[in-house]
Image (cartoon, rainbow, N blue to C red):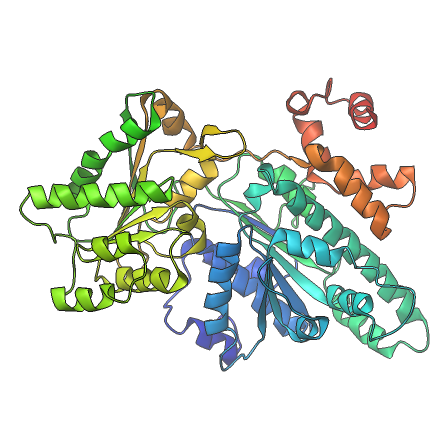
Amino acid sequence: SALHEPKFEQLYSKFETFNPIQTQLFHVLYHTDAPVLLGAPTGSGKTIVAEIALLRMKKRYPKGKCVYIAPLKSLARERLKEWRKRLASPPLNWKVLELSGDTRHDTRAMNQADVLVCTPEKWDLITRGWRGTSADNDLNPANNKKKFIDLVRLLVIDEIHLLGEERGAVLEAIVSRTRFIARFVKEEMRRKAQSKDALGANELLADEGSTGQHELTRIVGLSTALANPYDLGDWMGIDTKGHGVAAKRGLYNFRPSVRPIPMEVHIQGFPGREYCPRMATMNKPCYAAINEHSPNQPVIIFVASRRQTRLTALDLISYAAGDENPRAFLGCSDDYVESVASTINDQSLRHTLTFGIGLHHAGISSHDRETVETMFLNGDIQVLVATATLAWGVNLPAHLVIVKGTEFFDGKTMRYVDYPVTDVLQMMGRAGRPQFDTRGIACVMVQEGKKNFYKKFLYEPFPVESCLGERLCDNINAEIAIGTINAVSEVVGYLGWTFFARRVKMNPSYYGAASDSDEDVDDFFLS
């Protein structure tokens, strides 16, 4: 009833109340247009936070567009599947469209969409055409693209803490450009509103007037718990330096321990320098952890490679057979699992499914993947052995999550490297099912020497640094090409919009600046 809109209330008819985190953010999301940065652990209901901001936007601007940026294609696909089911069906009937490297849509389809789910690179490509062309022609694709960009009233960026990783430069470029575009469009509307032939702009401006000092495109960033939320909030347009009532409005940063469902974490160290033998020694403790913590409830085991999914599953089957209960993990009849297994294309998966263990990785077909997901959700199989992409892309929570090893083989450097801490947190976040569990359990199996590192950093908020510096030339060239920057003085102005500039000032030694004084920072940028 807090939504005061019957159509919106039907979306949450299964909810008695929003969870504590969603409740704290509700007023700022649904009754203001302030930018919002939410730092909270995985499993805190951040998707609902994005939806509440979307409902606010559609209530105020029925013709407005929402762009949801997902850092991975798998995450974009999952969100698309969920929102098509909920938002594209009655009573809302909104059009939800996906834009990624695998999809292609013309500008007409884009202009008809209410919600666009896309990857950072794709939105970067689209926003590069934000100026359109000088020819005022509706048939011109560049002008159609500009019309769509001008109507974007909400930009939701999921997993915004990935700013500090390899693809973070693109995220930084699109947020900085979006804020610049929003200011530009606002000024353009003001100019049009003063002319006689712009009644539509007058109406839009009157509608926008109540947002006060807020920008035309609202930015909502969703992240894990952060160590430096003020820099990130300031970059997104949140007033972090003021002292008034409105200061820091929209900035919420919860500790990693604040989860709707508490999580119990066990960190185990394993000796051995060589990767494969160390992984093999972890299989028996995996089996023991299942028997101890989750003998009858769903379990996800995360491993680093497709080969490891198969080897882990086969070892679990042999340990169960050693206990004279080879089908211990099977939750359905033998006849049923045999009939399902006969439809599976992957030979290894066909074998492990009959023992109640599923495999999930990019190498199996979409039919096999969907079959495994459905069986796991229904409880027909108890254990799912998956590669790390599952942690981001598919919402399959379990009672127990085992992270079997924290390294993966990096093809670029040709060696084993550690997962980013964010990935480990994302995997652990799958522990605990909101509807069924009062607590979740995560077991993290690491190399002995890294045990203390994980003990410290899994409970500390996550510091985010910028990686725009490595791609600064590319980004500035792109902005010059599309007309955002036209003079050397504007380069300095453009840098002022970036997260990179804020972090150089706050942490100069990390980026190689002499100190945080204005002169040294200016010298650093000019060099």
